[in-house]
Amino acid sequence: MVEVATRATGPILTDAPTPEPGRLRRRWRGMWPMLVVIGLYLACAVVAYWHAWPDPTSRVVAPNASDPERMIWFLAWIPFSLIHAQDPLLTTWANAPYGVNVLADTSQPLLGLMAAPVTMLFGPIASFNALLTLAFVASATAGYALSRRFTTWRPAAFVGGLVYGFSPYMVGQGAVGHLNLVFVPLPPLIFLVIHDLVVRQRGRPALLGCALGLLLVAQFFISTEILAGSVIVAVGAICVLAILNWRSVHDKLQFAAVGLGVAAVLSAALLAYPVWFTLEGPQHIVGPIQAHPQQFRSDLVAPLVADSLQKLAPAWLGRIRARFDSGNIAEDGSYLGGPLLVVLTIGVVILWRRRIVRLAAIMALIAFVLSLGARLVVLGTPDIDAASGRLIPEAIFGHVPLLKNSQPSRFSLYATLFVSVLLAVILDELWHRLRRRPWRTPRARRVFTDAACALVSLIALAPLLPAWPYAIGAAATPRTSPPTA
Image (cartoon, rainbow, N blue to C red; front, side):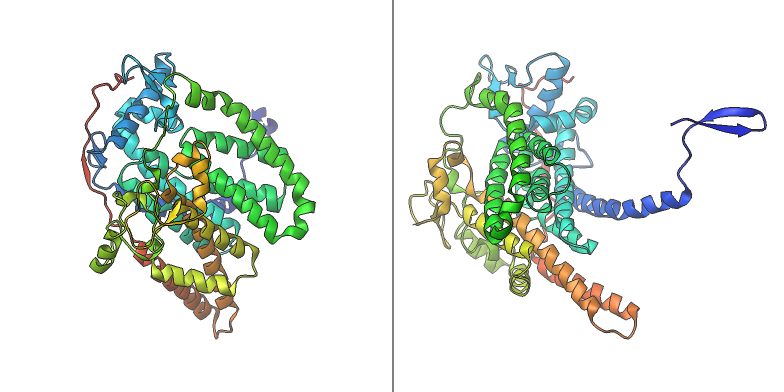
């Protein structure tokens, strides 16, 4: 907006008035806590890949594994294909002369597009390291946003984000460079929008539905497995919420149906061609995606037994863990630790009447049961074909096309997500209850309350401390890598 101002020399044109200093200070006061939270998450993430950053263009985590090299190649392919007007979804630069269906592989094209400037300036290895670091920060921040929805004390939400963004699942997938599985900021945002549609119901349901649909589409272009898991868990959460609050279902049904319907239509329209291309396009998937998906499933006692990816892992726990090792320690992210489980149990018992506590506790349990796979294993090495053990609910997915190829252990991501919300709500309630107690001085009350909550958080989270930084080595550049853009 342009306004007319007058001076001694006559009228002049000026921009809209500069915001008052007081308003700027209020805006800064509202922004700086979030910046501090993100900064703390960033400091933790940088520690993880500390050994890569002195030479980020040639050193990576898990250098001898094939997955990081393949993902680095795809990070280079996306900007190269766009600059040279080639089909970004099909490349003949690999597997010549037949080519590779990009969507049928672990290509994460959306991340390749996001990191294109870094790739063109510093190379795909630098993009890979930057995205892995960003994955921890973005995921933790999204977890913080979800926990913040249900808390009023900001540090409680910070702890919730810390649990989700730096959980054993994240630490394990980050150790082997599974960029598509460790970049998971979208699931918490998906659940936030679903909460808006099903519970809060503020604003326009169609707009919320569009937001949800776009989040689902974005997740498709990062990881279809995480998308499928998020949809399954979201449907389960909606059903559980409807059962817990059956009296209000009728009143909220229309708003939720409109929003969810818009999300379904929008995502189906935008993903129709990519899904067809994945399943029926050139060089599409033929046969099973995973040869032995049931090899990677959690053990019933896994939440209590640490592994070498945790800093505080006693040798005797390591010996127990070795008894049910699936062959890839990074694929079992179910560990929570005894202290955290005790805090959660006490908190759930005391706060059971709160709707969010019941929902988070039930969904964490459901997600953990799904992570156990089709057959229950207790202190034993899982059968890779899931032929032995007591039949449990995840076996249903074995009869569903595509879902039968998912790895059960990766449902631990969602168990951790609901645990993070649960812990944040418990800490928030503890903080408020301690503040309501009588104290001689407000300062003493504040100091004791903050110290008590910090101590509970420290005791609960200490067993989850990662054994960082990761081991780093020189990356081997594939010979079929496209030339630099």
